[in-house]
Length: 165
Image (cartoon, rainbow, N blue to C red; front, side, top):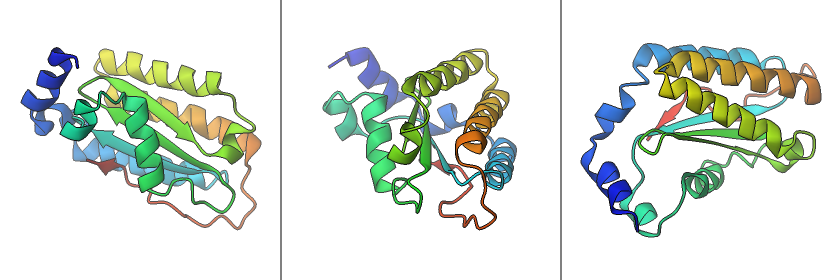
């Protein structure tokens, strides 16, 4: 186990890491997700987490493992068209992970998701949390609109508001 990683997660208070996403930023992201989902049949779920839970750290799980677990726990996979996308922001490790359902992965390759993650991480390193998140949502919106255009009957199957853990 990496002791420096363990200490960062245990010693940095969540409020310190989460200050990057104040209520105004969360509201802007909520509006962006709602607007995006009107143009396609995809379902977006953004999760912001400061530190990882101790059992996750103890087992040396990577942020990707946590993202996959949340994809399942939050039932992002359970959309009618298999078009759920989880965007996971792990602030203390400064990692972004995107997990897309099989319907989307069949049309959008992993290179696109990795590129979006790295662009967000770069924006976050520069302190541009809101603009980096909104730019990523816009890029995802373009791809989902292309591959999953709205059919007019587009129920909102997942909450638009980011989940802050």
